[in-house]
Amino acid sequence: MAAKTLPVLRVKAREERRVKGGHPWVYSNELELDATAKALPPGTLVRLLDAHGAGIGVASFNPHSLIAARLWSRDTEARINAEFLSARLQSAKLLRERCFSSPYYRLVHAEADGMPGVVIDRYGDVFSLQANTAGAELLTPLLVESLQALFKPRAVALRNDSAVRKLEGLEQEIRLAAGALDTPAVVEEGGVRFALDLLEGQKTGWYFDLAGARAILASLAKGQEMLDCYCNSGAFALTAARAGAKSVVGIDRSDLALAQATEAARQNGLARIARFEKGEAFDALEKLNQSGARFGIVVTDPPNFVKSRKDLGPGSRAYRKLAKLAAPLVAPGGIWFVACCAHLLPGELFAKEVAIGLGNAGRSGRILYQGGAGPDHPVHPHLPESAYLKWQILQLD
Image (tube, rainbow, N blue to C red; front, side, top):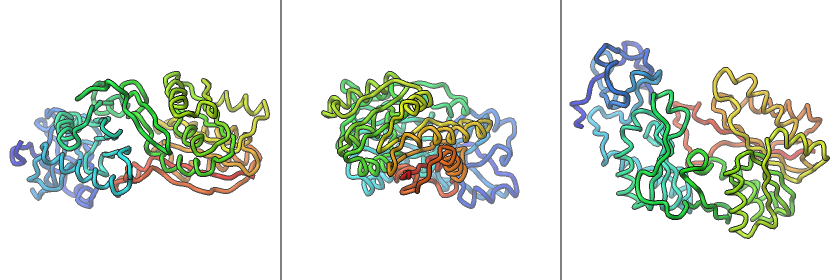
């Protein structure tokens, strides 16, 4: 659709400063919304103008969302078509190729890559695509077409099962959008090859965001006994095993994740070193404490404990409890890893709760490394809240 034929929305007078300053979103209360605008289908592309008629850009619009407009371009003449999307994908590809030597990474991370609501992960010749907004949903056919033209993939899977889709009025679904998955998608990390089921596994198939932290832990693992709690499909456990860990025990509640981890251990010749057990994390940690178990490395990478603002109090205290249970399992001089993927929990509060939990466990130590997601998960400068991930690697006395 030609840009000049798009519906026009105006930002209210004195409400345009933030979006003109670089923020990629416009909230519903910042827009002039008449009956015609409110009747537009969710995801409709619109031309954004200020109250005086000056151009702001082209955005996708959802009249039912608090974040009503999401900018795709600051050029009001831009056409958001296959050519436009291919250029954005090519830019994202070139950036990743500067940062990674192998084709296993998050290719597109939403607003930071100029594609609001779009998440695309790459597994060599297989891609996993997640559309988290109404605008991204409407552009999905063009996104798939552009991926096919640029990468010639074996398959493109749609992982549209994230909870945020409900906020946009979207149904959840998982399906194959293009190609075939006669054999599993594969990711290689730390010398270990993992087979993935993109139509059944968690999230978009792999937690690329913690690859850097896993590499650090693997470098510390030689000769160590390791506990990997919330092990998922074994990424921490098996990269450490490949790096020379003496033994690794992984614990998770998911039968599918445990099956994937066990099979990966077998296929990579690590079954003698790594074993995986089903269990609820807090219960398992308590039982290990009762048994007097000690490990040279303990990994705790839990799911999100703070999924909404009402969870902030109990969720933040859950990290304190996790620290209190995990720290006693670390042998003196050993290593403890803890992560938080809750974007609603500030990094300062996460660090505070970890420190309190350590004190409650009667342990002291020092932070060796701390960080967030890798460079394939860039952060938009005006969306610091999208820096959801934080983690620490500590040595305990």
